[in-house]
Length: 407
Image 1 (cartoon, rainbow, N blue to C red):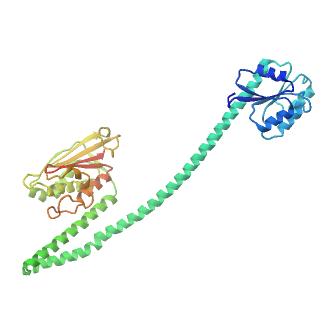
Image 2 (tube, rainbow, N blue to C red):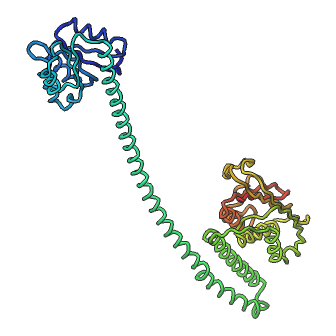
């Protein structure tokens, strides 16, 4: 018999009656357990309570069916197992009443009707099967609830950790604000005094200096100006993160016009040619994009080839995220692809990622001026727009910056 077969306890002191019951109920997937006395039935039930129904003869020696049923009902684990009495003598009202009083749910008078017995057993076994399935479901639900409770506790713990981290981050931001104040005030104040006195010396005493003194004084001026540029660059980099983000649909032609006006002298001095081809407006933080374009133009001017006129091409077009093979970008939605290309000295392709690092300079300070923060600011502004930037450089063939901003 299979382990999951429904078990029926047959109780009768006569073997032929036990065999008769099994014949009637055969081929229905039941597992029969036989007991030849009330005492034997109790012994079996104490070891195994997983019976769907008990079919019990009333007239048995030593302990009849009524006494056996009463003892079964005294057990909390067995009191709900249905008992059907089988007897030839329960045709009187007092016997029927005694049968129900002792705990039976039904009775049948011999000779038994196979069809009626089969029908009654089927009802109780199906009820047992449904109750068993319900208990299993309840156990599964309880186990699932335990898992959910554990997951909720873990989530609560993670939320506490996140809140703690957020508080630490808030404190770090406060420290950053303090650093910004120090940079903008405390660091620049002594620098302004140095510049004031060096300008006085430059105006009144410079011609009286020896040649060696003039060289050293020029180095002081250079270092002072570089310090001022570095502080301003650091301030710009920090503010690029802290700024309140307000995105507005903007025509890039307006951005470029503002940048050209701001850098007019530099562009005329280097005879720079700028070609633009823009499609559609873009939702951006306008003043930050002006800063982005200024930094890219400064970068191109700084690294222009001395023997070749500097030409810069700036283009934009709308592309689908699904067409871009870029892991950092979502496949859903559209992006504005902004490309910025020049024909300057470029750089080796191995430095495509390195160029965006703070204080990263690919060329000697004595050859090219700068603080090494300009492109880091560009990348930070792109990240403020939830976008992505990459650089493609080739030595003496210029560089192209590809910027992707969500539409």
